[in-house]
Image (cartoon, rainbow, N blue to C red; front, side, top):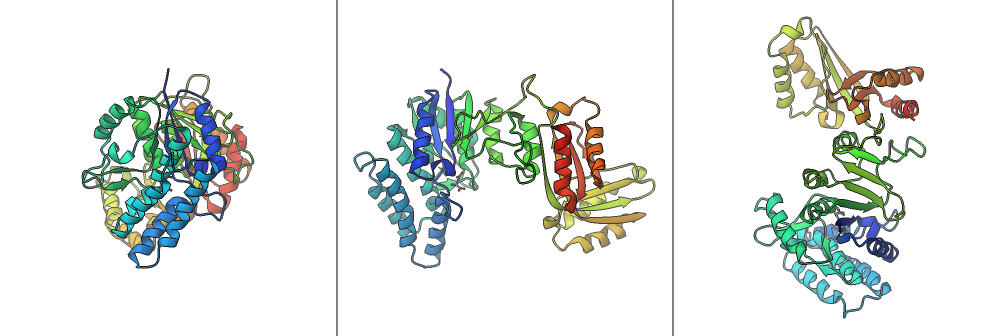
Length: 439
Ligand code: ASP
């Protein structure tokens, strides 16, 4: 029998009703042997995530403000879930758990320890609810003394441990350093824990349960009811996430990609929906010309022209050096024989633009230099574009039909994406035009 590792995000475990849905999902498939959980998330728009409450407790402690009541809010939420699910102190002594945490807080526990307790308590609670074993991530997910995640050591320890359990619940988001002190991943890091457990269990699939149907072909705030993506390759996902489409923590991909384990994004509120499958290569017959469209606004393009630039040695090196001196990373660098442009996120640029331009003019002496501000970048991504003539023509024709001026074009040599730059004001119309051309 194959193994599935199921990770449930904060909204999937926000309250009692969500807990019952999670239990139904887990019990519906015996292959779901290991479960990774986040801390309870928001129950409604104005609500506060458990992790945020815990960070707030720490902020109060270090500022010598009363924190006990805040922590009581955390405890009350867990106690309410336990009570409504009928989990009594015979199954889980929550009060003893709260006391240990409170004592640690009084003894000066750090923010990572305090924040991690949301996942810890939730893991305990779900394990008690399912009647499954609880595996504390602190014992098996390991970091070095500088806080760097130790992938191989963790994999060794955790795969040995998992073999001892028919079924188990593992809290997400944290592990521990060599001194046993808790270390957390960055925010949203339970996705990473799920991937680590999937690798250690040698799972057939890593299910990531959330509150959406997976990835959509375009942003639903721009396109009405965009088609869901059934299959997407890791590389396509990387291109789309880079442009702002996000469902999954980026670092969650490495552990499973290396071991060839597909990720299946699923919706806890609609468990029949197949969701999105992320894998190395989309199977034959499942590829689309366009997998997805994503973009973001507010870039600045610095465009330079210099006659015979192609034969001038060191031009690009000096340009890089200038950007480096100003501590600027750039997003794209489309080039022609005598032209080069750099595309920079305007937030990264801050107020450095005039000084950078002065430096470029002085050191590189371009024949002309133009700056285009308020540029949006749109990436149209699809493995199916490779070797298929006419895709770019169709995309550009769609934009031209709507009278949208293309300010920049960049197609990576992998040919799985075409990036166009348009004015910020044309952003939504351009995405609609591209979407409609291919759907
Ligand atoms: N609870 C943590 C956070 O809110 C980790 C997670 O949910 O993935 O960032």
